[in-house]
Amino acid sequence: MNFPFYKLAVGRNDLILINLMGEALPDEELLPILAKRICRRRRGVGASGLILLFDHEEAVAGLRFFTRRGEELSRFYDPILCAARYLFDSGHAGTKALTLGTPEGIRSIEAIDSSSFRISLGKATDAEGNEFHEMIEKEGGTYLAVEGRTYPVTPVLLSYLWGIFFFNADPRKGMAKIGKPMAASRLFSRKFHPVFVQIYSDDDIAFWPWWRKGSGYRELSLAAAAAAAGSAARGFTNRSLMARCGSYDLYLEWREGDGEFLCTAGAEYIFTGDYFFDEELFYGGGGA
Image 1 (tube, rainbow, N blue to C red):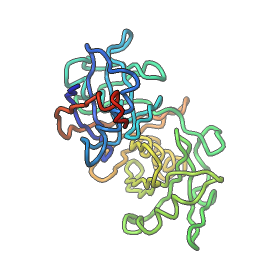
Image 2 (tube, rainbow, N blue to C red):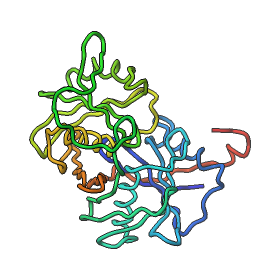
Image 3 (cartoon, helix red, strand yellow):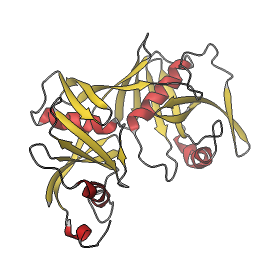
Image 4 (cartoon, one colour):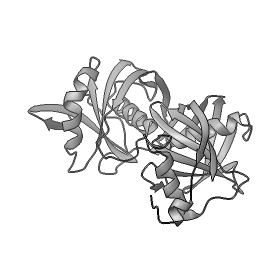
């Protein structure tokens, strides 16, 4: 089987998209194998996951997402931004909004322009699952001891547990030294993703997530929302702000009332091509 594909990226999170709309899906047991093979960095195209678009009766398209390990996820966000960009550019969607059928149901995406889309990332909670809200005091709270030093940390639960660390200066020089032991430690006896944040102003931050080795699929939009949640909760920023990760920008809104986090961002094309997948290797005993 030959699959034309697009490679897109949300920041440094690169994803492969295959459009199967109007076509029959490959056999179900082949989908995880296809994902693992096409996402291999050296022997495949190379990506952190595979997006499959297919016909859907109630939405512009259906979307299934597999990580590079062949695991199908039911909840995801960066793939939605990639799919929205492709569907908008290819004329499958309107100029204002589009819908996607996902394993969690129909998702609505607002088109801001041809390269920016607004999606909901859900509601954040604290580490105990309680409603996340502003903190009265900027100082105090939770601390994490790492290699003889103690760091203030703001825990945010948004699909995953994040630990937000604030720095007055650019923390990237020290990230290599402290990121790994931080990621290897525990918050409330749980694994978490550290996020390093520098505040520029009350509506502008920079953030750098540190991913644990072997942590599986990684999403930049969720890391940005966690950074925004911690910044606003501590009183360092407004509830709406620009979050920057290198040259990639996301706009985050923490809505009053319902506590929903909205992310406005886009996906960029990297390249396109064709991938030949020999299903006979699977049926003939070649395995994954």
